[in-house]
Image (cartoon, rainbow, N blue to C red; front, side, top):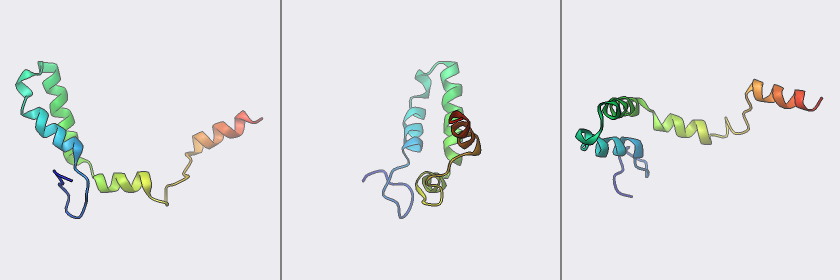
Length: 78
């Protein structure tokens, strides 16, 4: 898979890659679009994709139900 960024991983950092591509065309964005692009790209720099992947796919979190959601189902049965 091309554009692999993280050592030992076979997935590209697609958001960071998208930011790189869009920043190359920053001048075609409106001032508001440039502000949004800058904010998104700054945010993308701080994302820990490994932690995100664990949070979505780890067996530790599989089946986790927030208390509010569980409460809503319990009261709906009454």
